[in-house]
Image (cartoon, rainbow, N blue to C red):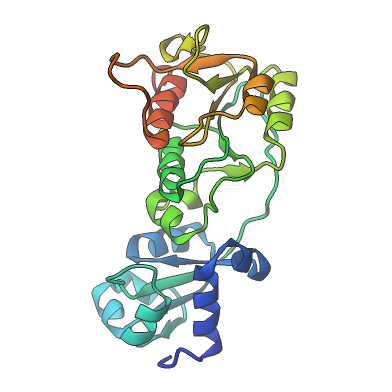
Length: 255
């Protein structure tokens, strides 16, 4: 049983929780909690499993997880990102970073400088729920493998395709070149109602920064706007809420 915070494996776990740079350098991320770890094991993404003896008793499925490294409750608290850790952790390999092979009839959500990792995780979960082909993360978005983002995905991070684009306006231009119309979520005259989005064929929608919306560069690349009809007293919706409504309009009605 690992009981010391100075153990190399414990130090690695703590480093992975510290930030995106450490995760990129190590090529690993740490999944925490019973549900997330079970999803990781089902997806076959796990390099190693750590658990407290109490967790081994509480979660019988851990017996089928292969070799499990036991950790003390004190070590579990040291590597946990939550106040009340469940005592189950999985070291997982970071997936390869690449852009998708866009399908002309695919449905895509593009995120422009999103700030909140919880919003990102919720959006990935919604994208899986509504059957989107992929979510595209532009520069400035949170790390999808940060502890808060991972928890918010509720396991969708292991199933929903998502990709990180270095140049979001350039990505939008490539999609348009393939015949995939891209709309930027805008509160501007001339924008199309979300209810009027094409029900068939390829489609992309850009969701912007929580405070400033879609950047001028991304909006210009898209060339078309879309808005969500709302009561006059409401100026805007939370980014995750807006994305959920738009994803429903993109995929829910036609399915």
